[in-house]
Length: 341
Image 1 (tube, rainbow, N blue to C red):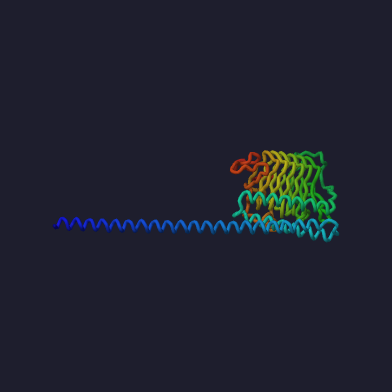
Image 2: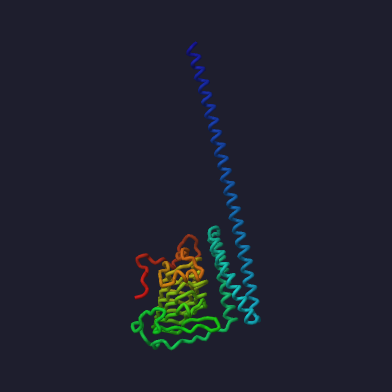
């Protein structure tokens, strides 16, 4: 009888244990379902927030872009004062558009980033073309403080900005543009006082060393061969076209490089660099230094701590997940750190 009671008690205990185990399983399943539902809810909310952010970005971006295009269209037939005001406003809005894009990179897909960057590039081209049509072109004038153009690089040492033996260019009295062109085998220097936030053009230079101090508004490099060009912080964009076998040190908001081969670019850029129709282009961080560089970064409105030098978009290579063969990163051991003798 006693054995039978023990057996009954054992059965009851096992039954209770089974009941507890079943309850625990049910509670665990319920907890897992609640956690899964919470994760799905959070993911849905995050997706909704991201979609709202993307929608807000493109609505704002497209609206501001249309406003810039309207300003540029209004330049046709307007007087010079009105044109200057419209161009200034259009330039300011374009800079703000780039800042909006930079700030939105965290939630934009790579495709959306490229789509916006292409649109911004077309807008910048439209702005530049309108400026060139509306503003009389500068007549370049060079001071006589230069050696003969047939002098060799060995005959001329790299000069500091105050050295009057170096070539310097006259600034444009009308404020249109300043620069250097059609020079070979020379050291060329422009001071901060000469640049004064102007648009700077360097064109048709061969085997030259160029030093640009201060803060240009924009910088255009065209038809550059075997040159070393070092430039202080540029307030907006740098445009490189038909450059080969050269070394560039550039700091800017945007870099657009076209038709360029076998060129090293030491870069500080706050957006993403763009290359198109380029081969053998290599990148490293900006490493040129000179007195007042920090102050020039501030004057140009560039953040010295924000550098996207290795984030390069190749418009000829849009294969996702596959690196472009047209540009590379310069290995640390091969990077140039000393620029002046």
